[in-house]
Length: 506
Image (cartoon, rainbow, N blue to C red):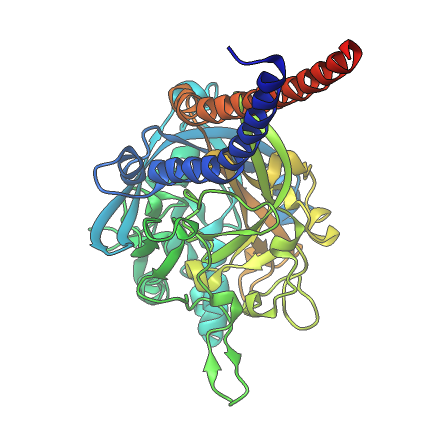
């Protein structure tokens, strides 16, 4: 049995050693182990749960559509300011899959596919059979395009409008919601002689319009969203995060290129044409991000619906179902129009002197093939000219901006929403009498909220597998360090006490 002095020295030395060892293990070894565990959980290795979830999201996303019902159509036709009320939401379950075509080292190549089904229960009392009065999108789109392409023929075209548009011949139409969104609105169904000639030209100029397809009988069908349903995307090539976890989900190429070709090009110092910053493919496909989120760096995601990458910036930390999350949002910089290459200068309406749209709006002609205009819902962050041009706009930041809540350890999207509003300029068109009295207005058509929240089984898995382990580490490491310090202090106290006692005995 050791003496008190020797026991004290031994305890002190052992305690100090344990403190050093515990600190080394805690701050050097454990973080590396935790990092390795996280990487193994998220890297897109064949045969893993991460890969299975990547190929098919195991739950449907909520795709919510809200339409802007025009409540004073007669006044609008006579030059009045449109008054609208938001109708909806019409909620669809969106099933998202990635169809893998090839593995090439740390690269995975795939196409995405979305399938929509109407969720009657979640939409109640709204149904696809609801009737709404909305701006006539194909009417304005076709006539505004014809005004540019065939200005000298507009007088003749005006004689064939009944045959082209049928019951929907006018700047505003009353339509069934299901027909407007997915089922289709007929165009050129019984065009007649003059209308038939015009319809031949419409088919030609509408060949690249996503919303316009030719039916089996030769007529045309317009829908807002059906082109998105059960159609494969272009080819994504992204990193799997096996060789470098910081690249997980980041795009290497999109459709075989590091650039898209929708926006204005630049000229380099040698006078050569280059794609330009607006055409750069940045970030992920918006559903997967690298682990170990750096709050000081922006995230980027390519949104193919609007043909551009979107920048998300960190806002604040929050919590969802007991999981700490870092919230990233897309605010006013998204459509501030400071990047001149997003200005196509082809959409006539309310613009700046240089032809570019005002703040908070972006032309989509090169993306969708029609004179559609993108904005945030209810013209959030947009120029007041657009906001005040329509009665009924009530922008609310938390309800209308894009956001993503990420688990800061794994980069998993715990909750998020992609939100966008689509608009068209109602304005007079040359030789079209029904448009003569229209007030030039950027008129909202509808806005969408593509949202997701991890279901309970997946949030429980994250809490059990990851957060549970991290919490144990956070609890036990301080306890071990504290016990080691206590042992060292106990040894020191024991040594001091035995020395004092020996002096007293002398």
